[in-house]
Image (cartoon, rainbow, N blue to C red; front, side, top):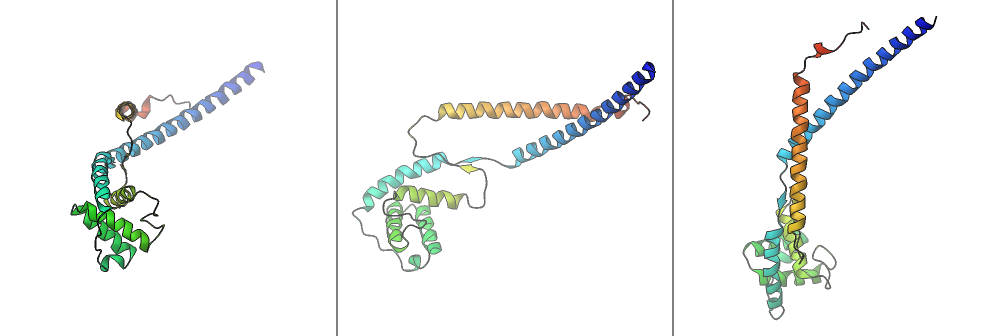
Length: 195
């Protein structure tokens, strides 16, 4: 009687181990699919750092904003019809490197549309222009960022981010090599228990 009970327990243990084996196999396959998806996204999506471009533009705009304080600039009536035309006018002015005019336009558009995209009178016009320019340049894109207005040395943060990026890439390579090993192993190596 004791031997029959032990055999039944061993049989039940074998069944459970067999189920566990296949559940782990399914989990591993799902994990490999996830890694493939992450790898695909990693290769497709490029991160664009616009910090340097906007930092240069910021210094130019600060000088232009100081110069625009004493100048009166005539803004066309067409640019003042809607917010969209005003934004388009600002973008064209920035593209044409008419920075003094751009700073003056922001101030004029604030009086037409207070507390809208052009900000309020208390807001810095340079920051407003940078925001509008960045938004226009990255329209429809993902993965763009900019860090501006910081006097801190970003080299340490940049170094740590690069280290982290390298570690993630190495981890992805290791997981991919395990995935290739798992795919190369034939299923015939499993022990059959006759269930």
